[in-house]
Amino acid sequence: MDSSKILIIIFITASLLLISCDNNSVKRIVSETPIKTEVLGLTLCEKSSEKAIKKAISKATDNQVITNKEKVGSATSVSVFPYYLQLNYGGLSWHYVNVTLNEDLKITEIDLIASFENIERAKEQFTTASNVFNQKYGNGNASEEDHNIFWTDDTNSVGLTYMESSAINGNDRSFCYLYYVNIELSDALEKANTPDV
Image 1 (cartoon, rainbow, N blue to C red):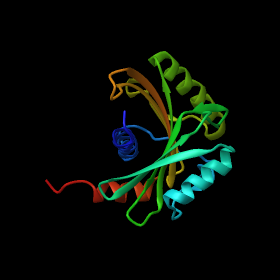
Image 2 (tube, helix red, strand yellow):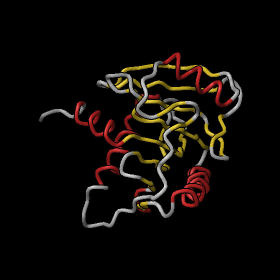
Image 3 (cartoon, rainbow, N blue to C red):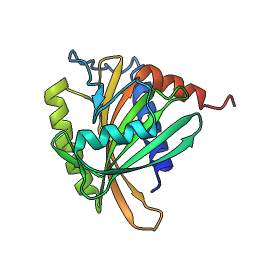
Image 4 (cartoon, helix red, strand yellow):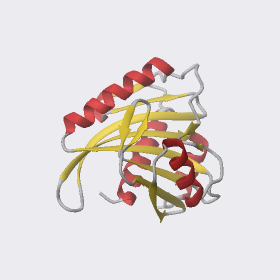
């Protein structure tokens, strides 16, 4: 699965979760603990570039990485892949990172992605990570039918999801996504990329 498809999936998932924050029929849990904004040497809402992202993640993980940049609507997606080893974050291994920059090159979202050969492994990663975040931020806003959970302080959100997909070469893969997102920048980016009709 190429990075633009993954970015679109994560963007839609994050948007749906943030939209559900406005749904008054379900009580939304707001964490009393502020959501972390600095992840792998990157900070939500700060201006950045492909070169700066590569340098920050390489330094934070003590790992050589390669990057790939592409435009998706008015956003820029920078995908970061380790040369040799997986990236460690939150006591778990992740295969690569996607960073979304808005039109002002501010970091809107930071996504860590783990890829597995079956859905059970993706679900295990999701469950383990969910337990870690429940301990840090309290009970999350969970949707079992959509395999999603997120925590928010009403400024930023962190969330997890898992899903099955098919890679470009035809091999089925399953993914677990961990994303950090700034709500205001994400809403503005979604609005800028939503057609009028």
